[in-house]
Amino acid sequence: MVLIKNISEIKDLVSEWKKEGKTIGLVPTMGYLHEGHESLIKKARKENDKVIVSVFVNPTQFGPNEDLESYPRNIEKDRELCESCGVDVVFNPEPVEMYKNNASTYINVQGLTEGLCGASRPIHFRGVCTVVSKLFNITMADRAYFGEKDAQQLAVVKKMVEDLNFNIDVVGCPIIREKDGLAKSSRNTYLSKEERVAALILNKSLNLALKKLKNGEASGENVINVIKGVIKEEPLAKIDYVEVVDSKTLKPVKKIENSILVAIAVYIGKTRLIDNFTFNRE
Ligand code: PAF
Image 1 (spheres, protein in one colour):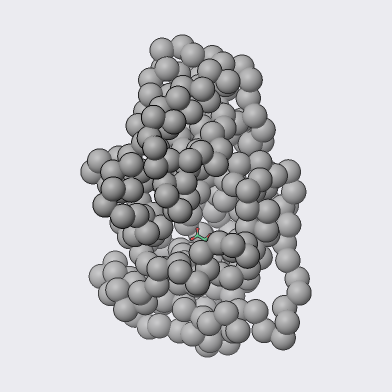
Image 2 (image 1 turned 30 degrees about the vertical axis):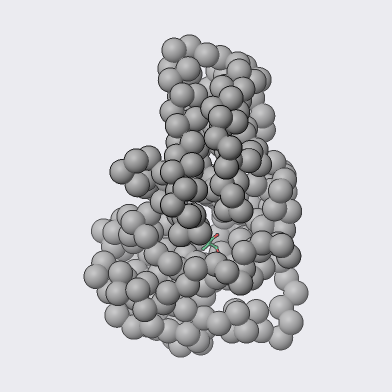
């Protein structure tokens, strides 16, 4: 396994691989890798000849008051995990390498980015789409792997790939959870002991909503109220949003008839956590 920091170096390597007819799987990450990332890497390893994991805390997707500076970083541990999973290349550029010469081109996916996380993080998806498209171009990957925990990100990246005719398959992978149900996230490391316990309220509220849906609940508003009711019981929790949206359009759903995404973002203390599930009424 090699760690590459330069764009020109990784481009030369992938050109060689392409000449040899190798397929390339890309796992884009911001590092501080956990079992969620590991599951993406393992899937990429199974489905491709070569696997690249990018580790880049992308400044353009953080708002001015967000956690860019404090975002957890540990390239040595990331490197070890990648090595143990049979990764070929860890691509770990510096921000000046990724955004050279006052880079001034951004990719904006409209519509899908307006609600959910996009409402409280207005420049977030513009930054994600810009860096992801750069990574697609740099790595010439055949497949790219994203977690379903960031359900809106996955939908937005798929739309960008379709709209801009990128020659890449975007593969979504299931949410990986701690034993007690908390969705794995690099941001979980921000939580104090007390907050870690409080954070279980996200999964608890979603489980109750799923139960109601399975019992026939068909009103989006009622599902939202069930979730809000549970979260409000937890004094350390503050709701950013609770939404029931169509899985494809991400538009709010009043009457639940088809496939929906139930998505929440909740502050536990200062840490903003997200979680979701999809439900299909057939
Ligand atoms: O999901 C993430 O970690 C990031 O948004 C991504 C896709 C690596 C882009 O920076």
